Length: 217
Image (cartoon, rainbow, N blue to C red; front, side):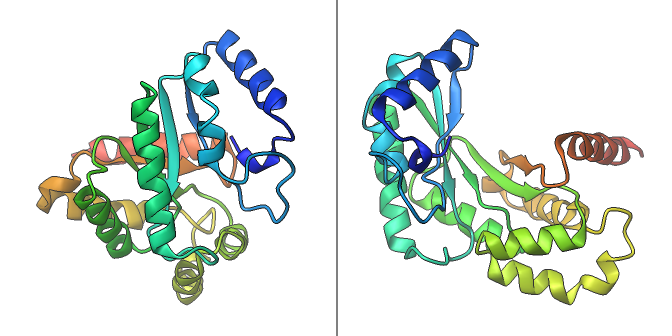
């Protein structure tokens, strides 16, 4: 849910009522990287402060976090906001979770997770991964989302990635993260959150194929 796209308190409430009727009890709440705030919610915290999510039966609220520097917001500001949102969610009787922006550098991901854990954010941390898609699409999305360091790393790997059927797939990144998880106790509870840039069906199919390969002796 993108807070900055809601034009009014009533529009947000109407959305939450409909989600409750559909049996939805969790949400990923984002501010949204949009230049113009169309309503009363300049941030995800502003939407959370209404108390509407707790009122309409939500049990889990997720927030974004960034393994690499955000292109527009200083890291200390993001840290402070995340701490406040996690605390506010818990005070409202809901469980917070976080998902990282997608990134292609395993060392940056694990360092960021360790930093979150040092600040007490340990219960439910999910690593954001770009699902399989064309190399052109993943490069464009990396630049659009401000993941500039990762975009440069992908560009350097362009010749090798161009030989893959889909152009980009997260196999190598996942393999390296799993290797690091095996040797680091603090990372063993991590789970993945896939961004289906190439489409949900393609992403789901790729995940099943990867799991089958991993299960093969």
